[in-house]
Length: 492
Image (tube, rainbow, N blue to C red; front, side, top):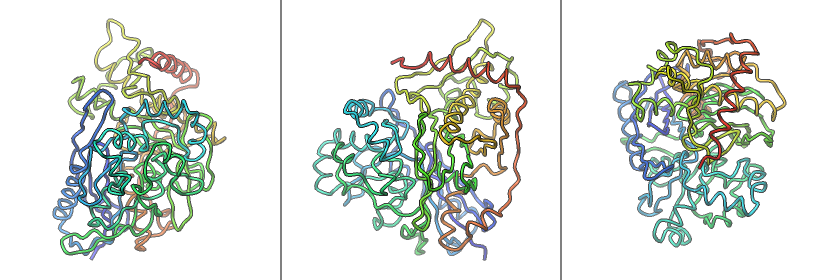
């Protein structure tokens, strides 16, 4: 009988389960959307139990719909929205508060306090990250300080913290495994990526007990068994979603680079065993750990990419589906002075301005909805160029090829404009479920489903986009974009 890896892709907007065969082909996929909770301005939450239940629902559905035996599942790989923080009771398993999502900016004041104590350099040197509400550390601190008796319960060893992978693993293994992998640990702003340990100084500064934290394992490791209908399915791989995409794109060589167009937009460059300290607003992070060998990456995080298209659909109501955005963009007149800066919850890399807000500039009497839709798509490409230029400076290497994936990469208009504005070739695989594929790949290593050389030799069809703009046009458009960004900054 054919064997499969069950890939669990727990993202910001949905939970998914995929069956992936030994040729790296997707044999089944089921998705369930997640409720987005906005209790206050700039606050974003998820219900941790909804995350867990939806993940189990899609597992049930993908297995039943594809008529496979549970014994055909060789292993489980997990990939997850990163930085999102859950704190739960060690005995009951009940979360003491909703999951605070990576997009949430309620902890800006805590971050400012850390900066006022001149901890920027120390935290950056230890964790590879910049102080920001984006990461898990200040979210944990907020929960402990704002939920009744949470601090006392944490100090008495009764509370556990986890990023979403840990929350899923703990529940799927019947409370047997409280663990995470190197890639997710490196996104908490609590993990020393040089020494590969939780950092006592940062924990003390934020008054977070170390007893709350999960054990950190290799990304390819035994995380325990999911007891599913009488069968034990081993969990053999865990990667944060952007690192999973890097692995799924087979960016195994130094300086190979990918960009994922999801809710946010994330560009990662493999830097192998080197930690590159960014001087241009990027982050150093752990890509993965295999057999105790750590691979690092340079990352630029854009907060609003596909979420900008969702805003056009859900809040503005000017499109009915994300797919419509391409049709409108192609219909729009060429308005080179109309810009949308989607700083809905501040600006990420390379600006890191939590006080920036969204802006539409360049509107004239004949501006129509198609023009605004096109400018929103264009903003994704411009933000990507911001990050790429920073990455080239930090790595002292020229990026000549960008591998892309994620939902918004299916938009042909956007991908062509992306190639035009970067002036380089874009390569999009026909299968854009690369994040889930990366989780499957890393899990498959441990059960000898494949090895790295086998993965390198797996070939898939791609669609390529090549630049059509000249450098003068690129420079003029990009200069106008930078002017628009400056006007959106430090608004609050």
